[in-house]
Length: 210
Image (cartoon, helix red, strand yellow):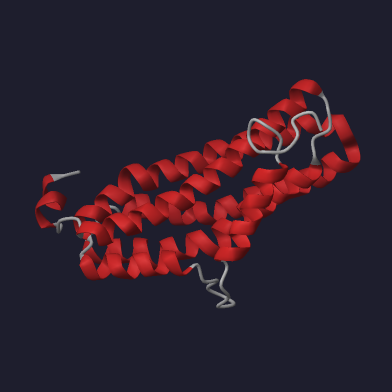
């Protein structure tokens, strides 16, 4: 962080900022858990040549398709990123990259969804291509979250004021679909619980021998 940012930025807004950042990090953690689970299953599938539980993979792909695009990214763009831009241009390059990656991530997920259909019909010959797609997506998305957590959130802590953090926190706590204005938290919580319960150990609570 350069001296100008540190000098002109405001101090973290006590518990308001911490609560908002916790909500964002919690959403990152849930996404990371699903991606790690999908990566584990894809690696096991390629190693053992045993067909995975397609229901689990479909649930994971649905989660990472719906959760970021309809639920997480719009709030980042409209509230966190926009408010940070309004205070400083020091992070414009990183923010431009992150906003572009939001669209790229959606495209990568669609490709994985198509490959999963191919895997279902083609069997073992699609295992390696599917694994490569999952590996690529995991690397892409973990790097995306790393930029947010190591660059954007610390910058926002120094730049955003109490009013900003209240707006950011309320947006992330509301869990409202920006298109349909529908409460989504319960839907995603149930889907996440489904994934945890049907995914085999060690990534979930399901039967590892199934």
